Image (tube, rainbow, N blue to C red; front, top):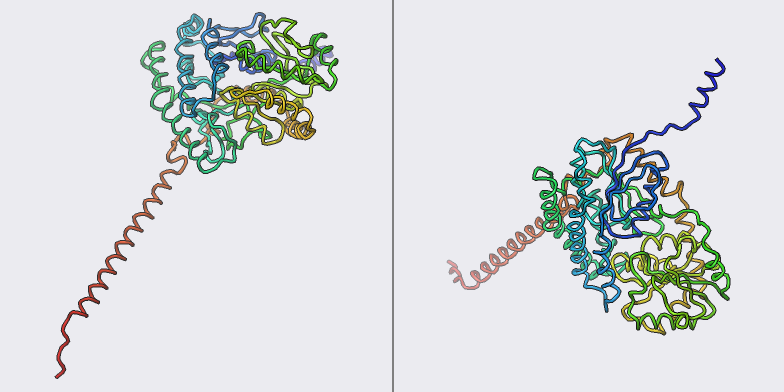
Length: 525
């Protein structure tokens, strides 16, 4: 009897884990976005779930329960795009940039569906059971037909790309054009009338492209590979149960979220780990501190034109009180390298940011590094190239925690002044401490929040009651444009009627006046 009681106590004390089959669909060709998604994947595997990932990137030694289906050779196709941004002489026109981004999404999809990896998942039997699908919607809806193929398991839309302007297709939220700038617009949430007008037109351009060109193109691709009897991707988008967006109210613009949108900004950030001793020694050898210089995982520093590389090296050399740790993907001759500059092909940026002698980070403005710098309380010098990077500069500059360097008009004096301003003006470090404290003050870690909601959806697959009613209303009715148009038309019609009545009365009065003056008076008898 004692043995049975002891067995029951042990059984009750052991947490019960219900293993689920999870499909993770990831199209975007981006190392950093893969790291963000991988944080979710590894945590799910750690909790006993089986995760199958269709992705352009895999791992050499994935953990138990993680199974990659590789979309082969996709990174090679994307490198020319990133290189072109480094060779550009100015930012794109915002309308052309919006169009080119969406054309890039279509090219990614067209390339991915031709891979062996895509065909592998396509050949899975239709009755294969996935309990939930996580779909990275950062580059659109290319893989959504798999939701239909596998008989509509509940779906979570996820993105490391902040809160994309087209997220309303999945979650029917309101993007307020008056104070939420499109990523193609170079302004913050305090816009002038002309900026708000431009912002509205960019959003409408994107809406039209998605509705009449991009999504119909996705339907064409789906019909070719999945057959003709599939619902449109526009309908599949609406089947999203939950959405994870990489935002945090402490640092992002204010956006009205429906109940099924979960902000998980910074979920990839973990406690810092030890890094190579040679990096530690270099950082500690600095007189006033060390600056990290990194262009992230997609932009290569060795693609920067030589004249700009020489300019940057000259500035770093002349700031001799500081050491600079530069992520540089190829070698620079020791004779050409200043003594206060160390180059390495890979730097564990998030871990190095936690070192107390790191005083700033000079980088491209990628969102994940921005979150990591804020979490570690390190001021920023941001040199954006495109995509969401200019907006990340705009957001952080509002709080006095960053300054920008214009890559296209880069010159010695401006770059040196900007770096010194962030390093030697104490307000940047003080402001960063405040913003960092707000960012970290959460009831649970963002990754734990994401995992909890995934497992909640496994327990509660029918959660349509959380969805926004905007899906049923559409863009026009959902934003009350029809009401505004009706009231405007009603007022205009009434004004026209009143004006016509006024004109009629005036003419009537004038006729009476003129007729009285011209009518002969009757003789008095």
